[in-house]
Image (cartoon, rainbow, N blue to C red; front, side):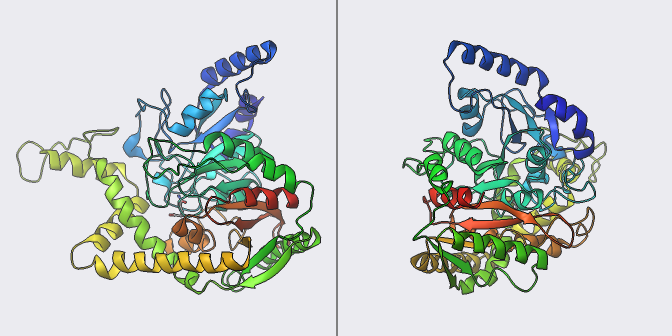
Length: 459
Ligand code: GLN
């Protein structure tokens, strides 16, 4: 049914970069057989899933939305992908994304944009617009995304889906092509909170192949969702973050946010206002740290190891092209503008003489943001805000204005800088445009279960 649906709508939506018809059908048939014999591998055995094209998959091309990896088929599976396979989930294919996960609209994909199923002239969010659109368009019940600054939660908000960024270290990053190692995290994109809990429990937990993986059991997420579904949140303290709301936020988004808050109060929660003064610097901090890490990570695309290799016919020096000439021509042809912009920014900020002024300074502010979270979580069990300041904007609207695009991540970025988990829940449709708005819930590190309790209570 999912493959049929993909056939019907994906020419218009373009959520997928690659669909594995044969592989998915073979896995589904194997699952049917297990079901008949009564020996299912997991609660999600046989449930199809779409995987963001930044996670490596044996036998399936992995492009990261970039021309530089065109035609590359990885020789190993990401740990999360291996866990999907071992649990019997048929993988439908790989989903579209902003090149190397840099963007908030999926318009920076080298393979053309994904469109929002709610309105095909609008963006589906980014960088994981493909995963969110696939779920919103009923092409897949489940998807995996990655969130470095909001790429699971913001697409979730603008497509009316549930998106979760787990605690940093809670889900293995092994086989996730790194954009910014200290910020990246893999997580679920689904239509319901319980589905996310089931998927999160499956992919979460310690992995010796990821040195930042936390060696602790995953909290009981499905149990927390079941508890929340009773609708009783008595005693829960909910902190509204003063700095994430108000000016710059669309009225309809704020109205739906207030409604969700009222629902929490109705369920017995106590609402308090908390201030996180350093959050106003989160965007600037992120857009230094992230390009620094990215510029270093992307150095490995040197035309020798992976994918594309462009050999220039004539080198400027007149002789046969050197390795450096090939590298330059390949990176020039293989990377898009946004990726080049961030490589230049990151390389500049890391260069000697500037390191202390930019990267060092950003790391200090990062610590202040973590301290703001600590202080806020002393006053509240969870923190809430709108996920994104606006509903989905029109394709092309912010393409020529990187800063306007970056501003979309205002409310999602602090969680990545501090490593705390977050969920975006559909909060209804904004009055101005009838498009989905998102409600974000944040919890302390390794208290991901709270996201599911609150999420299920709101559903
Ligand atoms: N939109 C943010 C950026 O462009 C976040 C991307 C992400 O989370 N991968 O960096």
